[in-house]
Length: 295
Length: 281
Image 1 (spheres, chains in turn cyan, orange):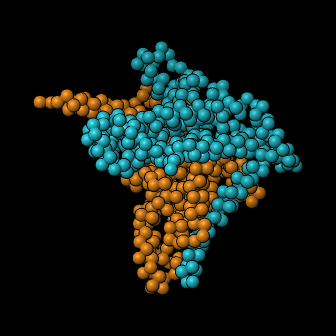
Image 2 (spheres, each protein chain N blue to C red):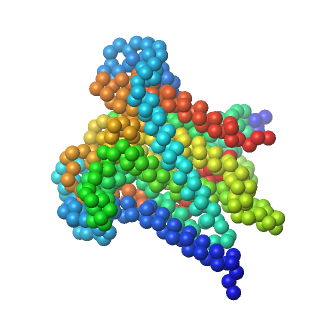
Image 3 (cartoon, each protein chain N blue to C red):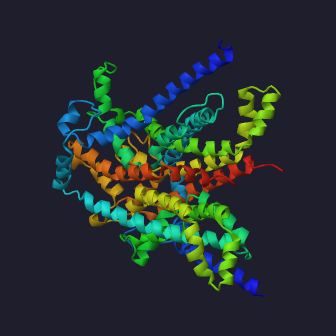
């Protein structure tokens, strides 16, 4: 009886979290869904229930589809080299054959960009790649470019730069995660594989990668969820409207533009949030479902 | 005599070091240029790329102030929001995690799975509903709207739970109970000191996340005197500063130098914290 009562303290300990979650987490989600069915603006006035109008408008509008497409392109093209290079480096760093020196230091340095403010990083790359910026200075002096060029007015370069910055900020974090997973794999597995005459490539594909699956799923899902919400870098790299020619317009930039439009169409902005929310959740849980350990 | 295998290993090792060095240059050069250019004058920056610091730091700060950019106030605003968020995240994160780890209550596993789902859900996408709701409550343009939600930081609870499971000693809790300590004083007096390394790690991540948060502040805060540093970075992109390169770099440097210092001191905690937040599902 006494023990039963004591375990009820669990509810008291988790109560502040639940209360704060209901107020600041769940209700805003509900409110966003609710607003997406209305024509509410920031100017106030009468808000009407408009059914699916906001959604049908978004689907009829090329900008929304373009933003979704851009967001996926930016995420996929950054994720592939990110996981690839991180895997390669993690394998080298843990390799008993190579015995690299200063693994901790290399790893710590590669991780540094991940901690820096994305807004500042975007502004930094804007400066570096501006017309009078260091990159132009360097390329012209080295004779690689005949004259300075407007990097950020070129669609491919602007998008490539967003992808590069994302890669630059995240490959170090992925190395750390993969290495944490690799050191958890029992070395006996590799030893017995070696006795059986397995080569390094076979050990990587037959032992390391299958046993890393939980970590790979984690990296995959968290990267996807973050990638679908990318904002700071593309927003601050150019004019905040996805220029040039909407090539770096992402989901969240579009949501912000609807929100900050002269009338403040928060109904329409909510609809963007809701659609991206649903799309991201379906993909995230889909990855979980298809890649989970099958018993 | 070198065997074929050994020779291969040496060549491979050399190639690996070369590639690591190239990656290191790519990683560090942009950051180094940012820091160095903060100390160079606009004329020097226009004259060419340089990797050595110069002597125009104070001058650049003067230019920023002259244009009405109050870097110091932005710094203090960011610091206030980040410290308050960190305290709430760590305290309530540990409290929630402690509740899950120590007590066996009905719904415990449901709740702890729910936390994992919350970590993976893109909550930021509900920012519009959050904004509208805060404006009804009169909390827009108020730091409270940035700070209070951190009481329910799912990522910290997840981390806290992993950490407590590895350090909590049930005997100590029982000993405290025999001595007549209340459940809350056991949490405060016995568990907290044990959990300090975990709390530090949680705190560093909470601080950095808050310090770097642009999107939420950008949507919720409107008056200039409440701008946090990332919002000032955004104003630095404006026309007023177009030709003041040195000053722009200084403005950016102020946002990242504190983080670099924290990293220099706590890199071990940070690197192991990254790993711990994910391993063991």
